[in-house]
Image (cartoon, rainbow, N blue to C red):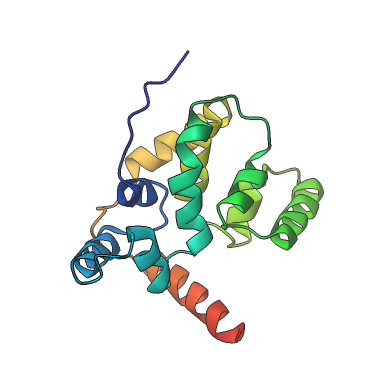
Length: 167
């Protein structure tokens, strides 16, 4: 069964993927007024909310992927999007084998990626692999999209501290 695909703005896609929040998008859109020569993804990356590789992936590759047959495992696409490194994938695969868990569940348990990001990739690239229990729990625990949660803050602090320690 073919899914009807509509082209969405990059900000909306990044929100659906759980990579940015509504307030972050609003700030970046306001920034774009002052920096008219910069693309939205560049502004989000400049602010440190996403990697530039991630913005480039969603702008250049995303719609090509969701309109064709997927040939690689989810880790490949998460790596192409700049969300997981090769080393992250190796660690996940070892842990996945050790605990007999799915790749995405292992990545989430290790704190390498958010659950809603995994679900976004599964829904769009691997719909048959999406666990119905995740869909049901997501619907029953829907949080307002414009509220910053403790999880969001923890995620941002983790990203920021990684950048600081990598210099």
